[in-house]
Length: 277
Image (cartoon, rainbow, N blue to C red):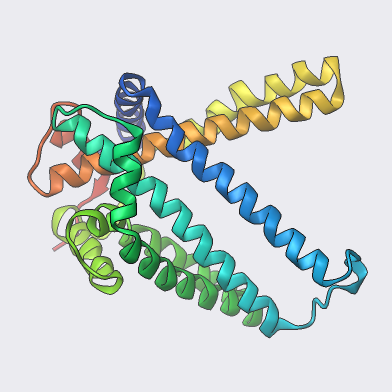
C-alpha cells in the first residue's frame, strides 16, 4: 500500500470514528474531563512549588535534581492515571456501542472505578519509564535525546493496546505490556504503518479552525482572540483524543475476534506494516 493509499485509509478511519462519536456525542465528555483535570493538577503543582518558594520564582532551587525528579515522577503518575482512567471509560462505552448496547457516561466512569488498582499500577510503571527516559535525555547529551526518541517511538507502539488489555484481560502492568506487544507482533508486525494519519488530520484541523478563530477573535480584542484560539485548540484536541480512543477500541475488538460493522478488517490492517519473515 502506497503513501497516498495509507493517507486515504487514515482519513476514512478518522471519518468512521467521527460517525461513532456523532452517534454518541456524550463520549466527548471523557477527554474534556481529562483535559480539565490535568489543568487543575498542573495548577496545583504550580501553587505548591511557588508556595514552597515564598511565591518568589527567584527562590526556586533549580539545581536540586533529586527533588525535581521526585516531583516530576509524582506528576507523571498523576498524569498517566488521569489519561488512562478517562480513556478506559471512553473505550468501555465504545465497546458497549459496538455490541449494540445503550451508552452512558456513568457506565464508563463506573467501569474505570472498578479498575482503579490496575490503572494505578500501570501509572507507576509508565511514570518510571518516563522518568528514566527523562534522566537519560538530560544527562547523556545529544545521544540521550536520540536514544529517548527511539525508545519513545517503540514504547508508543508496544503500548498501543495497553488500555483495553488492562480493562478486559485482568493482567498486571508488566503482563499487560507484554500482551499489548504480543498483539502488535502477531497481528500486524512491529510498527504502525505510515498511513495512520490522525496526526495529520489533527494538524490540518488546527490550522483550519483554531488559527482563523484566533485571528477573528484578535480583531475584536487580543485577549479575547487568545482565549478563543486556546478554546479551539482544546476542543479539537478533545475530539481527536476521543476519535483515537474509539479507533483503538474498535481495533482491539477486531484483534480479539469481536468484529463490528463500523470498521472493516482490511481497512484496519492497512494501517500496519506486516512483519517481514
